[in-house]
Image (cartoon, rainbow, N blue to C red; front, side, top):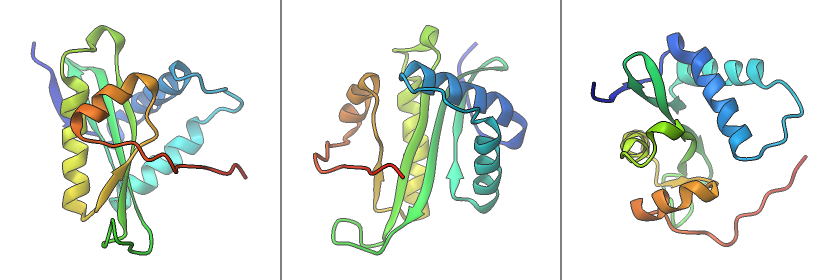
Length: 150
């Protein structure tokens, strides 16, 4: 059976959240709190207002890959005159399905959504595993990225 790609709806949200938590664990995040309710609140609000989109890869009814794109707006700047930015997240492929083009297809779909939304750039904090995919797709490193934890 071929892989089928569908846009995330509320029907798949609980499973999507479990995949997201598994992804965070795989990337080595310290699980200090239960994120389920915060994730559900975020996704429900932003799916409803159109500022989050996700595509899922299905093998039958089993979700084998996920993607996500949040849309944010900053004051326009020279590299992004619209000020609209796509923040890529939730890129995950079940280990048994990796190296089959699933992540690339999911990435293509959410990047198209960002372009259609009017984003001038897409950003991601890539896991070590994802760097090759994003580099091959055309992403470039920004050595100036920093964050400050509040």
